[in-house]
Length: 138
Figure (cartoon, one colour):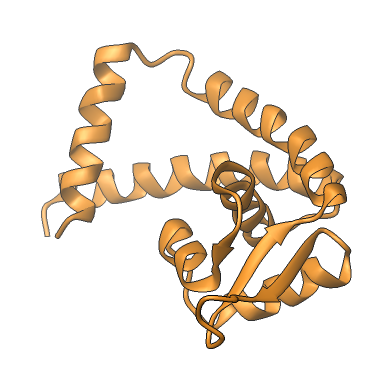
């Protein structure tokens, strides 16, 4: 393995860890985990979804989703109901309390991301997006 490849790997990891560390501070302020935030953000953006669609959108392993969903239900932030069209499926949606909470968290999270990448130019951002999309398509 080339040193350059390893250096790139470590640079990516450092960057991800920095963003996640700062994001965790925001989530913990609202008594949320990263997984809970991800599920709530997807439902806030898309409305009612089945568990499979949520999982595909946030790219989380299936084993984690039911535990996270159950914890959000216990907190009163999420409801799960049987799909009338297909009784084998369950649909998830945010409660009013869930919508109110995520409406506070998302702007803080967005501001964190904006600040983190503020020193990167628009063209550089597009280049990075293209590179990472190519890498993740493998």
